[in-house]
Image 1 (tube, rainbow, N blue to C red):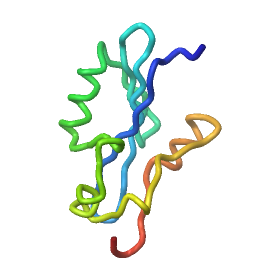
Image 2: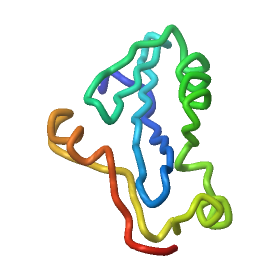
Image 3: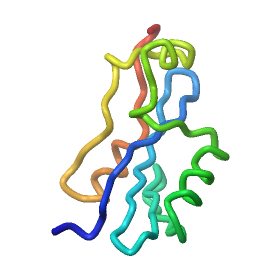
Image 4: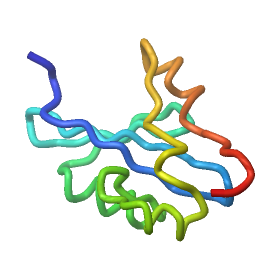
Length: 102
């Protein structure tokens, strides 16, 4: 059994650049956010972690529809959350540059 109950991907868009953040809710009810700097921030709850991400202008990837994505300047067909064998390699994929136009 894993040490976390759920994993969610969040993103912020800066022009044609996507910055990812991974939110994990731990079995204990706490949460952690792994960011594009390779840092893991620990929060007392999922709500606190979500509020911090929202304050930093991140949105939940699974909450976006195509219209939301296009309004942000990209298409959902252009991206998927990054993946890697470990967090060190994942950090390298947490910022994604997209093509010219959605």
